[in-house]
Amino acid sequence: MTEIKELDPEVKKIEDDIIQYFMNSKLFFGRDTISLMIMGYFLTRRILTQKELKDLTGLSTGKISRELNRLLDLGFIKKKKTAKRSQLHYYIESVGLSLFPYVSDFLNVIRKWEIKFKEIKKEIEENRTECERDDRFEKIAEIIDHFLRYVPFIKKILNEMEKL
Image 1: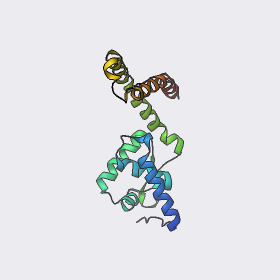
Image 2 (image 1 turned 120 degrees about the vertical axis):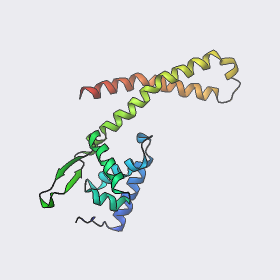
Image 3 (image 1 turned 60 degrees about the vertical axis):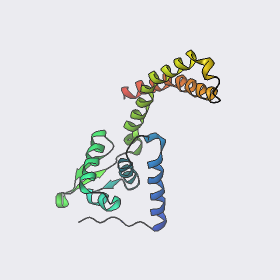
Image 4 (image 1 turned 90 degrees about the vertical axis):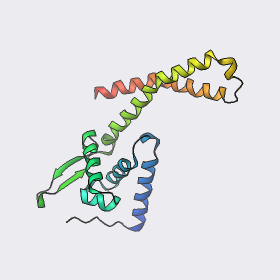
């Protein structure tokens, strides 16, 4: 039976802060909190068993199992069987490489919004006179222009990432 390594209370507070920051990060917008919490524990602990995750998170074995399988499929974590009691350990090899699929996914979401933002920009331009009466018009138009200006750069990054 594995036991969770008890951390010094100050270190545990830092771990909790890291996990909270991770769960609130805009980079992972749209991800469920269970996934982010588990990812956070891998970032701070690096190697965990399913039981350790269950004890740390308080989640059911089924939820932990589903999330571990999803993280394995994404390449965020890997698994290895230990000789002792043939127990499975899940681990993160490299923080940077593990986050790579999430960065790619995030950039793809932004890229997909390009069409919607072009439609909004066209609609605003077609109704410019009416829209200009709204105090927010200039700010909205500016945000859309900024977004559309960055899309080619995002596409270039995604193309380079696909080559890796």
